[in-house]
Image (cartoon, rainbow, N blue to C red; front, side, top):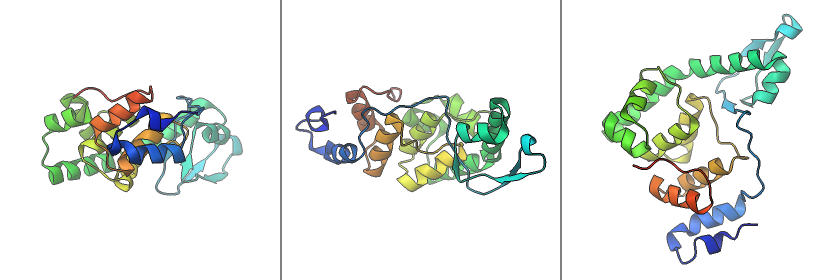
Length: 199
């Protein structure tokens, strides 16, 4: 088991993340990138071809394994998930525009703070690009969002925090305790995890 205290020895400002990681250990966690999690903030009915006209209520949280069982094949499962992502694009754009106004950041400055290009920010806001989860995390840090606001922004991109992904565990802890992106990168690097791009 990782000794987080030794990793961040004599660094008082990281005491909160040490406590969080001790309570939510990331050792031996497995993450399969093919199992994409999505958050639905309403409860629609979805027809399954396999069951004729049977209607299924989607749970609030579901993943590709559930959709495989529901739809019968991966292709249809992915199509259903993509449909829900598209329905949230307008909400994502509106949310981002609201945060841009509140923070008075330009798209260029936002891109730098979130470690993505200005072009990427523009495409996301114009609905031409569905951002990766990591990009949304970067935006959350740039806007200095709290955990609840970050969860909401993630949901508009079709994501949620994955408790089995070490990267997500660290980011959730960092946001919970108010670490900025630079500090979070330092924590990720110490734990030999993927980091955000350089500003």
